[in-house]
Length: 295
Image 1 (cartoon, rainbow, N blue to C red):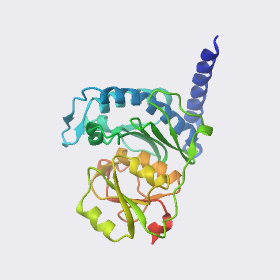
Image 2: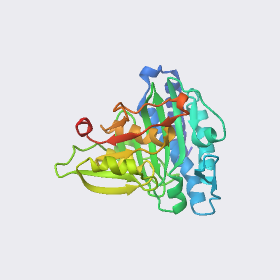
Image 3: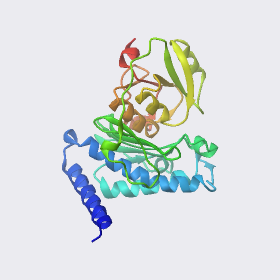
């Protein structure tokens, strides 16, 4: 057997062992890092299909709720669901396009949320600010997740801690030692850097930001806003328009693992598994510095 074959076989055995260990572990003892590694590998594979569509005709169309969908959403979701069924079959999965097609998942103590292309508008605008999002929710909180921006070659991984790396679609996942650990920053004395949605700003967001000591304001698409706060590149990201749980769970996981918080309209940590609300989020604010959130 060649060295390359031995390496591939070793990686396959390692993945199988990880999956078996995860399947056997009680929820309280889940290896969040091992789950996140699996998510990262799956996202890299799904991104090949995403970028193939990005370079060609996306066949954009409207779903019944009038939100956009294209071939990249459906092709990537099919790959992600297939790989999750192979590697993490014990977890129910709620994925955006399957839900839009009428397939519902009953929320339980542990389940996976998938947004195959978060930021479809950004995808269709070809500005690169779209992501592949996969997250594990346990008892209402996102405990592991991956946000991957394939057009930018950037990935954020959240398990027990949060890390970032550069990697191209379909490339091997960089080893943990080749990733950069990330953490939120304390609120700067000169004022906050605020992020707003590039495609979904509204009067409520404007009113909220007007109450804060904002020094700089930037716009960005998709879950990249959570990741910018997690990296200490920004301080606050409010969102008052409608989002779904699969839109936010992976970015929320990254931010929480980096030391930040995402608070709902009652100033409690944003919770997941809201089946009674068809998995819709209410308003929320993502903060880097928990002390700034309390103030």
